[in-house]
Length: 569
Image (cartoon, rainbow, N blue to C red; front, side, top):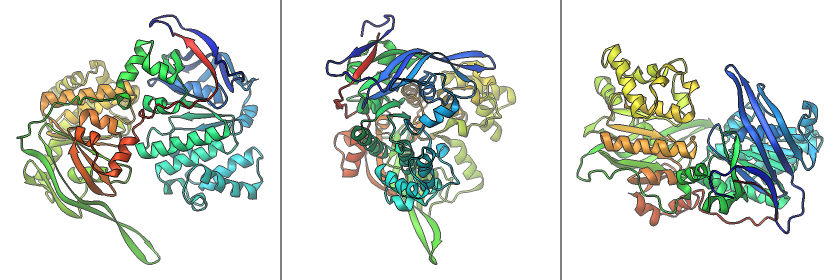
């Protein structure tokens, strides 16, 4: 690695004890997409290799070309995508230019793919076992009867509990973590030489993420399978990879052994990514201002309970207690974070505070008034003073509206200002969230994920609320965009004295923004403490396990003898 700004000259560096041929080789690979506005170069001259048993992580922001790179390897580019030049080789066999039929013989058999979203990747009307068995039958690795039995074994190998039972279930009956294990079972069914894992755990809780990655690491180590790991999470890459490849604008700007790149990054872009990754910081100082301890609470929940009736089974109907005797306050200008695994009750608690659902028991207070059963004008006033920022801005923004219409919708709903004043307010808000005025005329689909989330924040601020509930607002964003959104939330809190209820499964993010953290498990609030106190001295074993699962803290060498390709940057 040379000084920052030096020209990139792809090459191949071989470790002294590594004489094996790489499993995957990319040589000057170039990929483009044909669009209505012309040709877009997505991958521009990428050269890298992955040795047997090696894990290579490809990191970079959205649009850097990392997923296109993976899809080009396996021949799954979109219809408007094409390989313009370069070579792709798998254990010496040329894949570039192969037709669909020979590629189908390679997919699933020699190259396994673990996609990001199991809800999309799995067939919703086909049982789990049948979907795993399909790989075995397609590649003639087992007959129909043997494939059914082997599918159960593969589900067990992928770490799925009660595999025989799960094989007879449909995808919607499983949790996100379970569905991801099904995708792993499908990917390893053909005993491939190479696994491509495209953001395999980005939507999972930290503890489930760690379990999945631990299991995947064990499987690849035992079988000697190589892995190309596509991720925007540098913490995951730091924990799991032997080598790190950093992409920007379709090119490799830096690559090398993980510890070398993280400790001595040679490019400014790499340094920006590292500084934006909360899990890689040894001690993250809070970016939010401290609230006034003497200020009265803006919101309070007291002994909240929420129960849901379960379907009738054998004549009996059970009850699920999703929220169990939860109490807390949120001060003016304070950020209170609720953390925990999926089904811990944190989002249900937020819905009860927002009065989007009625509690089975307990009380909800806002600005000193009991709003537990309020309706009519009181409920409408609460809607005005409490706003929400959701996890997925694309799903929460009306695709038919322009950005201006999205932001002014709350103003129209509450008859605030004339149309001219509403348009002026929209312009002020996009400026406040650091977006150009030109976005007002665009549709949400035309914006990046980070831009859409800024629009969602602008809409939440339109009515000048006192409390904003942030439900996983940055979990789907790249680390650099995530850092900018968190900085923006802290800045808005400083300027307007906003209070936040911040729902997240990412404790590294929570540490940056929250003043206090409540840990939820199975519907109960098991501890509620100042942020730094909780991080340094967790009071519960469950909290300690959550903290131990933060990606980026492991950083232990995997010690594979490998052929190490690199770009001298």
